[in-house]
Image 1 (tube, rainbow, N blue to C red):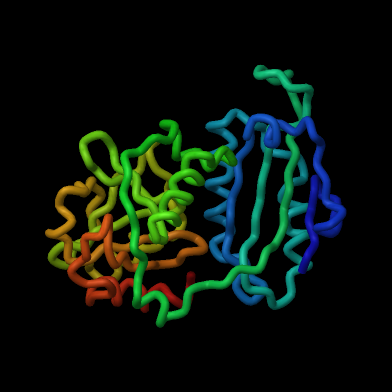
Image 2 (image 1 turned 90 degrees about the vertical axis):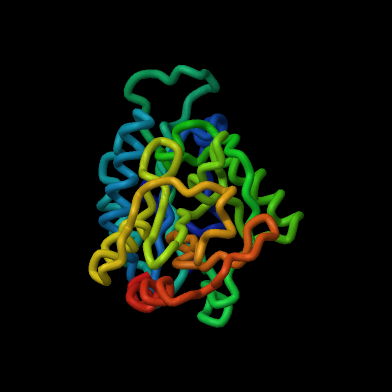
Length: 274
C-alpha cells in the first residue's frame, strides 16, 4: 500500500512532497514514531501516541489539529498488511532561522512500509553487537528525527560485521542500543538501565516489564556495566520492529546463552502480541 498522508492529503509515494523549508528537513526539528502493523492492525497504537505527545511536549512542538482524525482515515486504508507505520511531525515550514516564529503550523507525514521481520530460526541465532561510548546528545528520551548519532554508530557496526550498537556512559554503564532497549539476565533476573533522558522509553520494554511480573521474573531497573559481560547469563534487545532479539556476542565476547530459559519464557509469552 504505497500511499502517504501529508497533512491529511493522501497521495502516492511518487507524488509525495514537503516544503524545502520544512524545519524537519533543514534542522531535523521534528519527532517521529514507528509502529508495527500486523495483518492490518497497528499494535500498541495508544502507547505510541502517548509517547509521541510526550516527545512533542518536550520539543515544544504543537500537536497538529485534526492529526488523529487524519491518522485514522489513513489507517482505514490498510488491508491485511504486515510491516511498519511511520509518523513524523515537524515544527513546520519557515525560512531557515534557528528561532521559529510563534504559532508556526506543524507538518505531519504518515505512511506504511513493508518490513521483513525475523523468524524464530533467525531469532535463535541472536545478534552480534558492538559497544561504544555514548556520543549522542543528552535528550534521548525525545524521539527526534535527528538521528545522525545512531546512524553513524550503525554504519560502524555494519563495517565491523555487527547487527546493532550498544551505547555506554563514561563509566561503562550500558544505556541502550542505537534503535533498541537493552537487557541483561543474571540468575533468572532481568536488569536494564532506568528510564531517563539518556534512553528512550520503549513501548516493547514496558510490555516486557509487565510480562516479567506476570511470570514472577524480577525486573530490576539499574545499570549493567560493559566490563561484566562474562558474568551475564543472557542478554537481549527489544524494539518495535526488532521485537525481542537475543544478543549472541558483544565486542566479540560470547554471551553464555544466546536464547536461554528466562528469555524463552518472555519471548513465547509475548510473541503473539509483538
